[in-house]
Length: 329
Image (tube, rainbow, N blue to C red; front, side):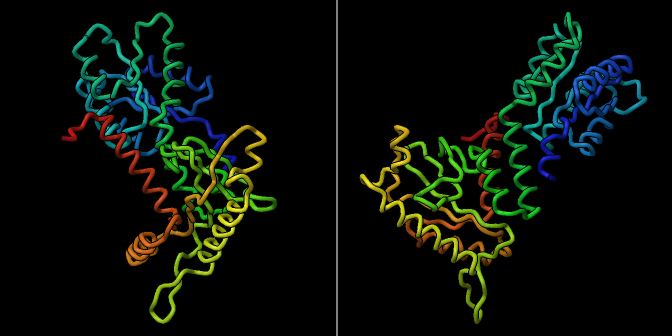
């Protein structure tokens, strides 16, 4: 129920505009289109309001004052606001609304800072249409959607839901959570009659990996006389993977899955790579021990939900650095 409510929540838009008449129009148009709208009027309260309400999209007028009720409107305040907003959330889209459509230098600066983000010009023939269109496009930004997916996954892991919730979430967002080395993902996948793996992810080279998921609250290790051993939950998950391997090896015609052959798909499942995702790190000792164990395992890796989150965040960091044009020499 909680997940359903989250998915039905309306996108939140923050309007930063000092002109009351213009702001009133923007808020009215957006609310009529189903958005939840907040408003600020200057650099100071705009940055504060963005931190308080976490909007999905921000509409920013460039020529704003430094603080509410100040008469020091200047483009530099708008540019400073844009910089501050992107520092906090580099993938959150900011749509710049401006009357400076003919000032090429300002346009160049803002385009460079906003990484090519959308502009809406106040002298447009149909400002309402252009503004609503820009918000729709902003919400479909791949980089923003990816960053939002990672945040949602972290929140889901923190809630410690049932295993099937993670299977369904990763199946919907496999390209973000599992990474770009994959080109497709099926879930659940029947290895043989009555035996299903949580996820079967097909790599770019055409080979398949098996993913078995457990709960974030399940322990990876248990302590016995001061030594670390696999927990019962972890040992069972590894046993399941071994059963999947055995079932795949028994498939006819050199391991091609007969179910796929009937669909005309040739998917090699010889000795697939396999992953068990279980638990979260309790301390650095567990992290180091798991890294050591994985270095000795052949064709199998044990990951935690922290590992999945960190991998996705590393990819986001990579995108952020290149999106910002940083020097990588």
